[in-house]
Amino acid sequence: MQNKKFDVIIRGGTAVTAQGIQTADIAVTQGKIMAIANELSGSAETEIDARGLLVLPGGVDTHCHIEQISGAGLMNADTFKSATCSAAFGGTTSVISFAAQHPGQKMRNVVADYAVLAKTGAVIDYAFHMIVADTGNENLTHDIPELIAQGHRSIKIFTTYDKVRQDDKSILDLLDLAKRDNALVCFHAENDGLIRNMTEKLLAQGKTAPKYHAASHPREAEIEAIERMCRFSEFTGARIMIFHVSTREGADIIRRARARGVDVQAETCPHYLFMTVDILEREDPARFMCSPPQRTPDDQEALWEAIADGTIQLVTSDHAPYRMDDIGKFANGADAPFNRIANGMPGLETRLPLMFNAMVSEGRMGIEAFVELTATAPARAFGLHNKGQIAEGFDADIAIWDPTLAKTYQANDLHDNVGYNPYEGTTIVGAPITVLSKGRLIVTDGTCVAEPGSGEWLSMDSRSN
Image (tube, rainbow, N blue to C red):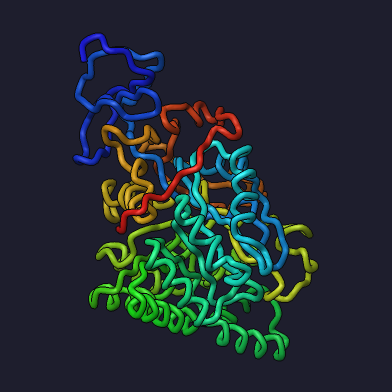
């Protein structure tokens, strides 16, 4: 390595690598990590002094809604540029967002349209989940298999919501297809009938305020749907992922299913770990509305237990950005009932700092578990095999963290286009200060310096996980 010339060398940081925690220099050439060594010889066009700092793999956020039209016809607040810049400020360097099909659409056209948006806006690398709302029109027989073969190996299914939910037969057809072609099927798992039943009862009683949203999505809706989807996976042999698990019972169902050999993985989100249902009693509660809703302190503890024992392998943002205005949350009027208020919160930028604060600064599980949960495991689950680790040959997606940097979130201090921070008033210790994507500086000195469109599409590897 004497006198070798690299593009970038990060010197002297405490790195979490595939081999563990070590003080190391990390050399990058042509977007790849070329060498990891103590006091690495050689030079580079760009040298970064990381002494006293942590050098971590960039986060991989596999659940975010970007520049997406909802089933109700609302465009969310972020473009690929604003969302991915926000993600980068939070230390995330790869995202999987959604190509959302609506009834009557050809899936190949849907994916192509989202690809254009991402190609011109994204500043970090990205992939897509295919939201399947229509299995007819040759989508099941032609478009979806063809897209899987091209590398779009993740399918998203809703078991609730008008216009996008699939019945059991369609779900089984998609699971059979995924099993045959080695794709992963992800579920928003809530029982539609239970939600409809409770919503009708609440509205009939005049309980229309946003705080009643939680009651309209009872925990039994999640419990029943997770159990059913695990059974469907067991029946078909298909790999599945349960999104945004929020209840103790949901985690228990997944734990038991995995114990009997069902190929199911699961994720949860920061808003289930750091918020409880009483947040809907606060001022402007619509900003905290999400589905499933936040639950109880006991559920929070159960989710941490499930993370610790491997039942839940990922923590993702479920970034679903709607502004608090008449083109966002209140598109149906300022006094709209809870069932006509857009669901979702921003989370791309806050996911990693919140988890770092809990797991590292407060010592809940430690830095290696933090990296596994927020970078390595998500990359592995979705076949992004050059992401999520600091290791030779991997993409140089790197976030340099100051573990002592304390910050109290303010009302509107994020870099997305949502206009509010749901974690206003929360203090975190530890934050990324410099972020690289494939060796390119994308965040430095408090600025996103990446060019829109500099991110690249990621093919999902066909290997089973």
